[in-house]
Image (cartoon, rainbow, N blue to C red; front, side, top):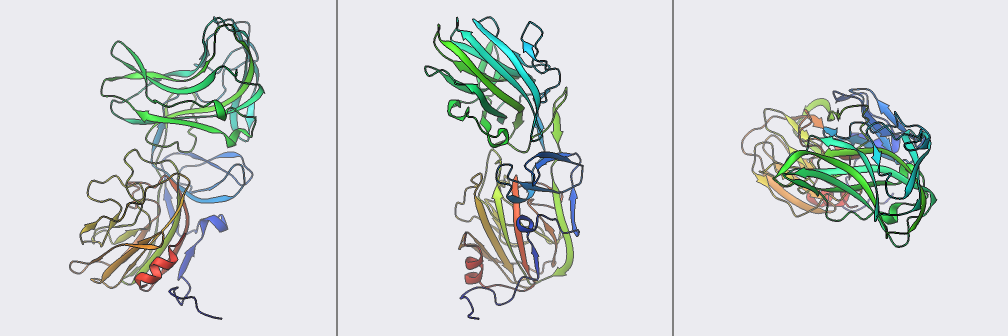
Length: 422
């Protein structure tokens, strides 16, 4: 067999292939102080218990995405299930889920057609029909409290069109609205979502909007859909709606179920202890999901000598001292080239550390990022943190760790460049 140039001539000492195996090595420890949701191989949304790691799947294709690692997030929508909903015309026996509302004095009839669950997503089917006497139909997922000034938020919900069509002379808008002194304003400037109201699998169509509150936000508001059209328009369309979510942070994370109050999904802290090694190389494949508001470059993070650990991924890092790569456990911080964390994109990063005071080489997507020399003697690497900048879970990936390859030896810069090609 002919050797491939610049590739390691030995197999990894340890391969953690989450995406292909669909399994988590039993030596890996997960700490998360709450239950959490993920998609199963059957395409259904499932809930796993606290401290259980999540192997997540694409709900449409069934493809395994890898080990899901997310920061703590709170869903401010107090009731995002379908409890309280009843089939029938609103104000004539029908009811939306508790806390939700729709305009009924606009010439249209609003009717709940059915209530159920599709692939684990609780939903309510609503039909709007008649001739409009106003220019819009509003649908509100409940009043929101807890808005913080000058803070990024992301709103999301699952939707599909199940009958009729949005009027050709109108559009649909998904809005995050918050109150300010003397009135209200929308958090997002671009929120047209008409094209996304399609007949499709519900899990395939999660709409999201995001933006940042101003300094004069007063703490309350709404998450809502507005259908706009001309007065006198004949209306008849039906939509299936499920799991509205409003969370502080950039990008929508896994669904957080609520049943009467805002609920928090704790952050994932995932790590693995191993014997101490001075010579070590690690390559990691990962995919970005929801992003933090002030995303920095993708990269690696090597912790202090006292922590004796190297973090496999430090993507979306928000620390002011680093844009993604810290060259060595006690060496200087270095800024690599710009590799923005693009949601849904697979990236690959690697490093090699030689000896207690040797070189730290790094690479991402096929090119060198930075190199540095340890300043003084440092402890051997012993703890691996997956998707976090520390084993305690700080600065989290908000995405999927697909694969981790570990060599108990040093690799050259050309080798690192080669194995990180995507």
